[in-house]
Amino acid sequence: MNRLDGKVAFLSGAARGIGGAAAVLMAQVGAKVVIGDVLEERGRQTVRDIEKAGGQALFVPLDVTQEASWAAAMDATVKAYGKLDILVNNAGIFVGKGVEDASMEEWHRLVAVNLTGVVLGTRAALPHLKAAAKSAPHGSAIVNLASVAGLVGSQLDPLYSLTKGGVTLFTKSTALEFGRKGYGIRVNSIHPGVIDTDMGQQTFVMRAQALGTNDSEATRKVSTGMHPIGRLGVADDIAKGIVFLASDDAAFMTGAGLVVDGGYTAQ
Image 1 (cartoon, helix red, strand yellow):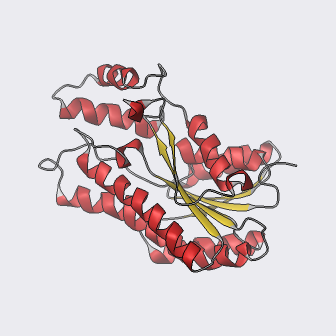
Image 2 (cartoon, rainbow, N blue to C red; image 1 turned 30 degrees about the horizontal axis):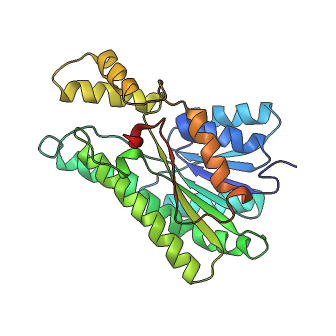
């Protein structure tokens, strides 16, 4: 028996990167997977990859900043698979600018995706997760993608850090709220270090610009050196943690933050 047999999982921003890797791995361990993203072709390709490997998956268009888009995505999920057991709030964007340098437009966009998107996703999924929890021995699960930047300060990315700190405490608070109300929904966050994905590459470029250079390879080497394990993370490193938190193996975990950062925050 696989770890997620019989489960239905919805992942936002899962067309590629960490979300894409998590969707693939969840399907491999038995879940029916729904990918919500604005990147339609990449998302549909990830679905094709899952189906080729024998899994079940569906793509739905999703703008995480829009309540109506979330409602349509949840309707499509339940119509296709009958229920929802797992929500992974993965969608996020990165703005590597200081307080004085970022425009208000950039700030509002950062908040809309990284914070409002998580709130809207949680609200939209909640009735379905509550319903599924009633017939599951260990209930339903929400996994929120935070960051090490939501645990410690950031010299170069304070606004991004603020949004991920918000996700960290929203996770703890909703875990407490849903526990108090007896919903049977566990809520945990995962905190990656620097991960070698498209967004990770964007991080190197923006940090190089913030330091007054265009040498993104140099900032990549600096970032690598800040991980005592001796390398950057890859998407599968985080996907495995997401699967663990979503599975019944984490049945006694709620309000927790799983740090998968190659030792970054141990210093």
